[in-house]
Image 1: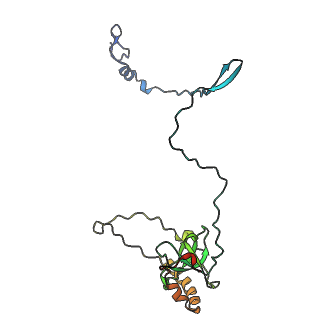
Image 2: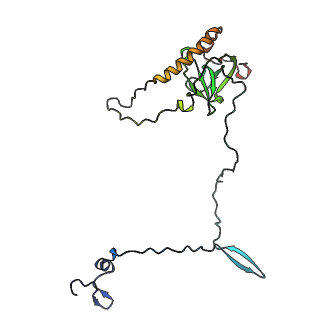
Image 3: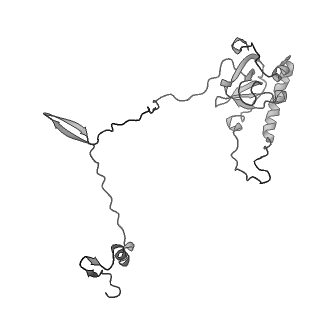
Length: 234
């Protein structure tokens, strides 16, 4: 075979010198322009008509499986209801003293300030009285008492909303080998401290005017033997 010839040589009947992959490379077939032909989408029939005597019936081509799951798979029912705003209980009004039932401050008495757009309640201790700072609470986890304060003179800034309490997304810092798993608690920002002091200052002035109110807020709510919560009038 001459040099540069891309033809395949027949060694014997039905036996060639080069195989299919070798000839593909010798003929430089990988460099040719490949034209992609759009395939026509043909919809395959899913049913067929079968004659039964004088009538015809439409029968599916694929039979349905005779097997089914041993346990029922629950499917969510369609609903047209949309989640709305949590309606505030009638017993909770601005200035109402609430008893927290969950969280790190459970058993503490706090003062309700306002309801946030998310439906959560904004409450405060005040912090200087019982150590409860400005925080959000679900109204399902509070007991509304009959004790109320007139806090109409207390102005709560509009910036104190749900976004005010969301933690900032900060990149995880590399841990030092000497520190191990211990991480120092980040100090509270100056803005949060200023907001806490301004609200507490206005509320403390109202608390001092009411007899025994400071001691009432400082006392933690507890139950003793023989005292049933359903028999207590708050």
